[in-house]
Image 1 (cartoon, rainbow, N blue to C red):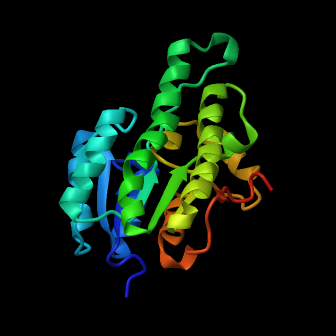
Image 2: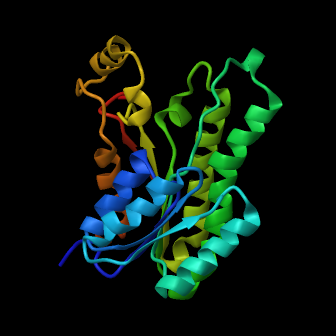
Length: 248
């Protein structure tokens, strides 16, 4: 039996990078996959057929999780289309980097809406379904930057630290209903975004990591598989750093 067989997962922001890797890993492990995308329409549509090759049901939704009403509609649609929802992964996120002295109010608010408020929106909207089932695994994507901070990323760090505090509170509130809520804090993960950076800079980052390499999106996806599966039924309220020892 595949590790996630019979489960339905919703992954936000799955058209590229880490979200895409999570969607593929879940499909490979037997889960039905619902996912959202926003700007990357072609990639989002192509992902459905890629996932269905694993013999599972997949469907993409063009939806903005930072919109409260849209998030509620999204959860309703997923439950209606799949009949259930067992796993929620809040992966959608953006950066608007700048030093605090130059940071605009707009870029602060935008980060808080997309990175942090979207977690509130989707978790609140899905909690009724999870409580009815008396089961559910919520996985919220933070970052090592949310644990230690980073110059030029005060807004991003605040949003990702907020996700950790939010998730711990959710774990305490919903634990009695057998609903788990955990956080994954990725470190330096090599995606399309890092591929555009200067190779010498990237190599310098790799050398500073104890495992001497950048992480792959699949490294994060595998941690998600574990937290979504029945292998982690006694784990909640935790932050797992997938960072190659960066913060050790």
